[in-house]
Length: 527
Image (cartoon, rainbow, N blue to C red; front, side, top):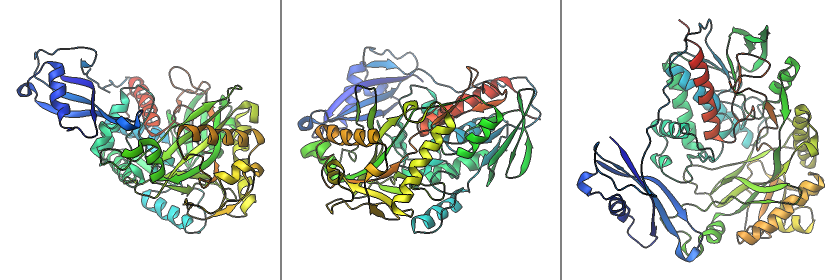
């Protein structure tokens, strides 16, 4: 049955929100008796005018075929969407192999499994229960497991995050990804909220459910199986070795994530075409969540119709250098995210409830070839060098920290204020001028001041800075052609965020689906 979408239905906070349905029917020229189903398809908050905050809806109306509808600028028929792809006919001798079980690898594996290809998925880290135990132990001051941590393990780096499912790509596969999340236990509002998030707690459940479905369909997930080498014959993939075990394969999906530095070094030695890619570095900035809510919503802060306040701020200077906020975690915590011994790395994480006292976000400055050259391996070394320098500042996994007031004044350390740092292992007062290159430190100061003018309280003296934040995106892009295969290796499919083709959970998952479709369209399943 057709679905009519009626958009831009705006209601004030004090209006009856159920009125959205009648307003949608009236705009579409329909009677309530003609609607087989009425539901919210999209909900967002318009807080540009704090004294007149409004909730903006898109309403979906399902009607019988042939029902007359008054179409217009805000009334349209939803186009049908499908991921159906017919299997190819080229014989495949061996099951496809996927390296990495983050969003790209998971969704590539899911689609392949559903089409009967029974993929073999390699994950260097442990399954969820063991991974969570290793992370919790590290947070309590235990040793770092270099293969089981915030970066590596079942679900990839996004598993320990806010679980944001927003994306700027306009790909119809995004809906497929969200629907799978909901089907596997994520909250249903993911399908209509403007800024959907699942939280690290709910996301872990979804990841395990997705893996179990792949296994039920004949796929296989091998944990503790780091990709060690790739065999090429006549410019094509012939097999891989992982965890000391050789695996024959004609197709290898490279979905290893942005922190697999040893894998990128192996690819370089193999002669694959790779380029250095811009990324960003900086700190985690923490504020009281209540102050962020006031800065965004004014007197309406705390209203039950309003979500926890979150922001995304950016500024670009005359030299085309950017400073911006990234991965904002309302009601969240700053987490230790190192994956190499003798380094300090920070990241942010929220639970679904977002009920923590603090908000945190990455405050980062862009870096590119002007900072580390055109060599991708040098870019990775430059990134790791910051993480090692942070370790030297504190002599441990404790993170260097400053309050915004001290940082803006050029004084090392922090002054006690309203914001208590949430970094689990603990922080030590330091000076970020001793950690970052002068240009990066200057950009971070510029960001604090500029964003303080846009969002009241952002640059408050007791805003707490913990660093370094270095794993914003991959510093490397593994070159691939229009057919999505590596330019110098047939059957090798660079995929997702680590390979340089995505920037978050949903976009990485979509890239995994695109690669799966290409494999399915060319190859027949193994008998």
